Image (cartoon, rainbow, N blue to C red; front, side, top):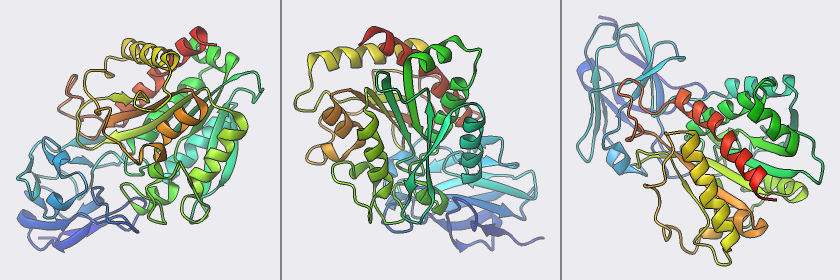
Length: 378
């Protein structure tokens, strides 16, 4: 029989092979981020097991950053890197994550979640520019990669300013899938919601604020080992230029609504986390926040407001987080949006779980609460 070969030397590839001699007992370790101790993301190709029972054992799953996230989780897999499905026979015993199935092709790709490649990112921003958006160069990352911003609408000072940032945590690829859905709708000149938003507001979208971490296959950090969502109080050129350049642009343009797009490893729901715990949070901000959440729930049944983070989840570090710092500094509506790595427990899909396509649809749906906010709050 052909020997098993496992490779991860590609964009966002990440795995450590302990022993792959026996297809029925492939021993793996989930690799830590390139410059930090976080570990959870994996993405690799397995070759040589067509028609043979395969058992993948991730032996250090219990040591990962969000070990509880493995409960009820199912590994994502693809034969063509376009269509991803979930491996039903995925189990976690509190220490080892085990995945068993029979591949139906010479090679199969596995990942923690459906990947979003840097090549696809380049296509996305180029498509945005071709469709009429301004493609703005914010600066460069730690390793010199472009920080891309798409601006929809003029930068007239009298317009309301909406900012959307994704992939501070690069392994949360659903965030860029979300942005792709939002961008595609904004580019649709026949869509009345998109037309009206473009007419009355300026929308700034940073679809991948952490390109270094994304390409390196990191879960949460950039190439300097920084968790960007803990850098917003005092970003630096050496440690977090991605945040520094974005925040500089926000200060120049202004911000009336901020959305920070993420994925949550543990909770199987789509939800938002606001700024009600901040000192100085005003009744007006509370009204805007509650109306936005209600409008989003009406726009998409995938979004809900019952489950989410406790208001006291963050303490001393609270103003280092993007949505909290922006809500505090600008006094605006500012939210963190979370999507699941698993499935949406309210609307489960056993075949694919939560995936890129569902993230895209959610991104398109958020234009409705954005428009509602623009039309009802000066």
